[in-house]
Image (cartoon, rainbow, N blue to C red; front, top):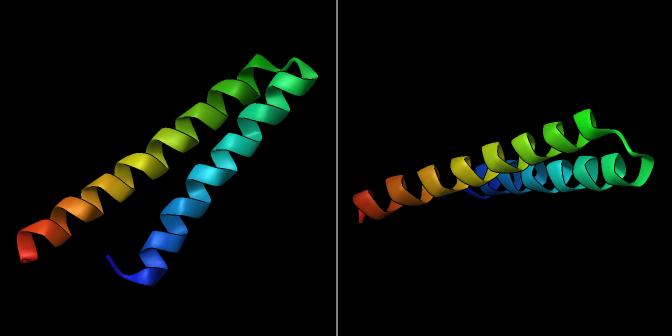
Length: 57
């Protein structure tokens, strides 16, 4: 996985965790859900990239 893509996907996951925590702190369920979705998107992108890299080797 290229470093740039790894950083992007990791940042997306971290951003999701921050949104989820913020939503929990202020009692905003919508923000919690959006944060979890952002985390899932980042995690899936990382997994997909790792699978592509594994097939190349």
